[in-house]
Amino acid sequence: MEVVIVPDAAAGGELIASAIGRLLTEKPDALLGVATGSTPVPVYRALAAKVSSGEVDASRARVCQLDEYVGLPPGHPESYRSVVLRQVVEPLGVDPAAFMGPDGAAEDVRAACLAYDEALAAAGGVDLQLLGIGSDGHIGFNEPCSSLSSRTRIKTLTERTRQDNARFFDGDIEQVPHHVITQGIGTILDARHLVLLATGEGKAEAVAQTVEGPLAAVVPASALQLHPHATVVVDEAAAAGLKHADYFRHTYANKPSWQGI
Ligand code: PGA
Image 1 (cartoon, protein in one colour):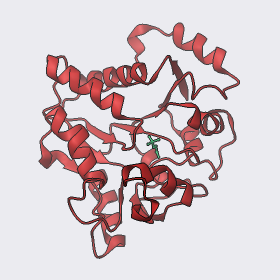
Image 2 (cartoon, protein in one colour; image 1 turned 180 degrees about the vertical axis):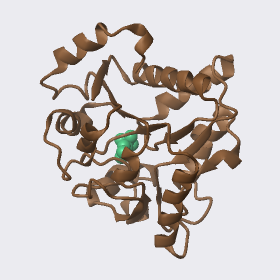
Image 3 (tube, helix red, strand yellow; image 1 turned 45 degrees about the horizontal axis):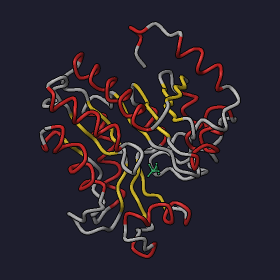
């Protein structure tokens, strides 16, 4: 995998927004897999600025969710459908009809998971999947020990993840759902380009295990080692545990500029 060390979160956002802009120039109706949480916000901000300035046209882009809480009432402001509408679909001028996600309010959750995997395949697959990483190494909501070939399914959140996400629910862990629908690790690996962004010292250990540790279900993000086009963008704080940081800096600094990420 390629590791790009950037000075800060804003620089990471700009780099990834530029890559998405390039993709949309080549393929205006690209299917963009988006992530939620705090980390991707600088990407969406940078991309929205490029759309406002006319540098990027996202009007034909298609957008899909990575995961969703189970059991929140439809329209709940912290459902990931609401978050993606607010942070991505509306600011980028994406047609809401071109936005899809798993149905976290479905009565038959298993059928909803299957339907989502089928919908992603029917859409031709994800062109670029943006990922965050949990402090426990999760991607999507694939918690430690998730099958590395899992498909979209229901998962139970760890207490650590519920604690991490309580800040979106008035700091009250009781309001954080226990269950989620998440693209499986196998589903995520089907995307043509994976871009994982990690910022802050709280992610340093998970990043080091992902990039330099063994491939292991206990660190779900280590599955990126299996992907032919995986890019890990980290700020200095999140890169703090990387033993090969100098090598990563050297290779990126000497990369031909036409190559992009
Ligand atoms: P965060 O979440 O960006 O809010 O830290 C990342 C994740 O849980 O994948």
